Length: 400
Image (cartoon, rainbow, N blue to C red; front, side, top):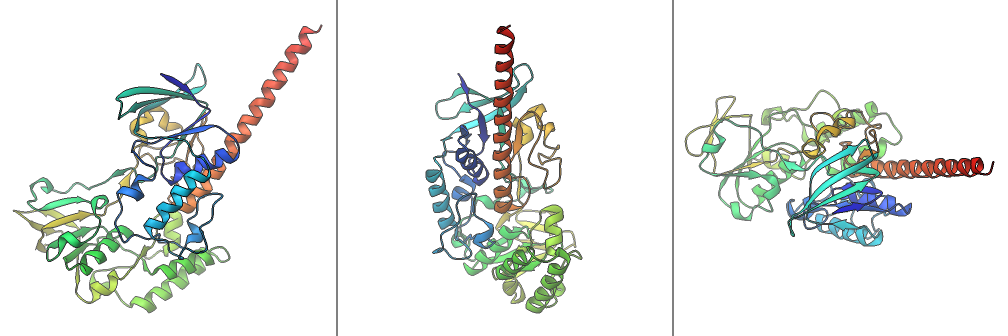
């Protein structure tokens, strides 16, 4: 079955919803294809209970809909999901769920995109034919667990943090959290407050800032240079935390916002983890070397530890190259990320676009979605003018 649609959007996370809303505001028909049975499935099904948006709400809203003034500055996960539900209703976003996209390709003969989909409920194939394809499956698509020697021999439990909800089941258990990003640090804190014997692998230099410091920094970046803002962040961080090196924590030489702009790595927001580390309630280890016998883990510095559970807060990978096949090269590199640097990362050739790949979170999604919708609108209008001119020329010729 072939379905004609001007714009096909792959992915019903915030990126897909934002793009569809912007297109609907411009009266451009579109459809969103989602492999799960709900929109925003990462936020709805694969995040932990205590999660809040780490940036102030002024930096996190989707296009055309600011957050309510009644909501707190840092919005809890449940309230963010309510906001997304309302967003779908407000902008009449058309989503088809349980649609697994296994291939999308550009047909040079027709000048259109063919998106091959499997309805995983009915087990029926569908083909969507579109003038424009928006890849909105995002950076955080497939959970990533690094290769560790003999991990399969570990006799305890191990899993990616997208399966973690809270620390209740891990009371008095020895738990190792691998990863020092926002998820890893917050899960480490959560485990320690639930009574788990918590340890963390922190192998890279990290900037630790409290939420209020990040909010101040983000606000100041509107008016001051990154260099000056980073100097203030360095000063504030040292004032709040002091020397962290004796706890196995090292600050990068480059400033937190300079690193964010360069590579998309945001400063790690500290929700109380550093205090727990200083108090000895969370131990810090270096990189894992291998799994020894049973539940014993060896680290690169020669230390060992016994653990019941390993939680990998090691991020996600995009899966664009798996289904966009050969045509991913018109926009994406081998890792499934845009070839072009921000702010020119969102547009490829032949009517393909990417939304949510700027490594700038929800603020980046807002930027991408509006530019993609505007560009599609301009292109459609240009085509209409060109078609009208062609028709006028034909009529003019026939009148002679």
